[in-house]
Every structure is written in structure tokens, then in C-alpha cells.
Length: 170
Image (cartoon, rainbow, N blue to C red):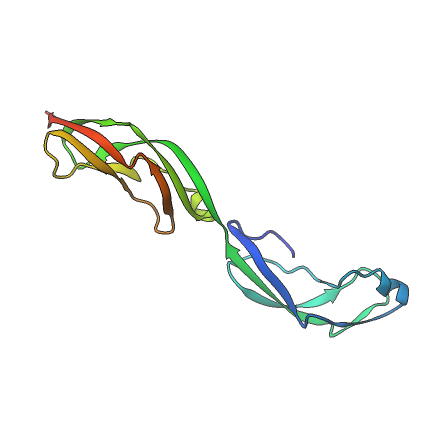
């Protein structure tokens, strides 16, 4: 292959059609061949399966191939990864009252495409407590998460928080 596989992808499969070719040339040249290579196949702009007709290549002399070209089918698959995100500070939304939260942070275990997870920043806009409609007093509130749809939450600790709401802020 030529060039790098696009970030967040991996080569899942590569095959040539035809899978075998006839090689002609001096016996000593052919005997040192372990396999027949193609000219490099570029990945630029690719993010899934693709086909490419390519010439066969050998760095020795006086060798010919029949056929001298093959169709290469390459299957690229998106890489999925799991990431731990520790100590994300938890704040509340949708309340004009003063409040306290316990505990004050959450541990998350998330999974998804590498191209997204490597860029993902989880903060108070993505992990928060929704206090809408809650009156002053003590409450147990489930964590709300606003993450890209491709991201799966595998674990969150804790998943509920104690919230004490005081009188509205002046």
C-alpha cells in the first residue's frame, strides 16, 4: 500500500483478482520471488471499500507477468475504541436557584469511532444535571448526557447525584 490509512480507519481486507498470475523469466529470478507485488495502492480520500486496477511489480530483471494487471479490492473499516474519561465536573442546568451537588464529578466509559473519540471533549455542556421543575429541597438526579449519536456510554459512576436546592438566587 502507498501512503497512510486514513485516521480512524483500518484495512479489514485486501484481495487481488485474479488471485494468481503466470510468471515467466529466469529460474533464479523466479525462485527468489516469495510473492508478486503491485505498484502502491493509495488511500487518499478513501473511507470504505474501493477497487483499483494496478500493475504488477517486481524489482528483479527479465520477469513478465500474465496478466500484468490485477484488480485490488480493499475494504477499510472504521476503528472503534473505548475511552475512560475521569473526573468530569458535573454542574446543573435549568435552575435559577442556588444548589449543591454531591459528588461533584463523574467517571465515564465511552465507546465509538476513533475519529470522534480522539477529538471529544466532555465538559459541563455534555454531562450535566437537569434541574428543570425541581423545587427547593433535596433530590436525587440522574446524569444527563449530550454526546454525538455515534458515541455509546458503557459506564458512568455514579449515575445519580444528590442535589440540594436552596431558595432562588437573588
